[in-house]
Image (cartoon, rainbow, N blue to C red):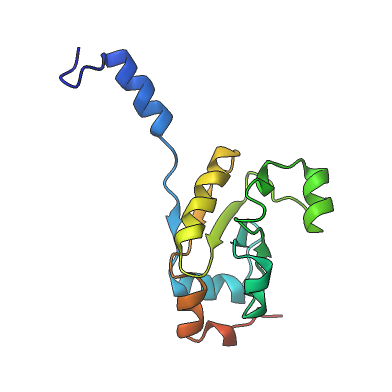
Length: 142
């Protein structure tokens, strides 16, 4: 028995259940570069509610609102297409989550991992930082 009262085997099971891949943390310049030069292996995911998109919608991002559609990534591909009007991102794509201030992005990232999306990232600065640093002027290159 370990000092905590957990046996070694129970401790191993406990730590294995807690192990998830740590998401990559993106900064303003990373997102700016990604928007200017989109990478089809990476998907920007805005988890704000549709009403919040009226303030500003980031170019190239898809909207999967955390509050009103928390199980979006658990849907079948067909149901996802029907609900959101776009193809469901494959699990091999890196999903990069953002919101208004970064809090919902973290929750959405954790949910995504529970649905099999192990390649994830978070832009903690989210829309607030994006707009404060002039991101609204950034457009994809054509």
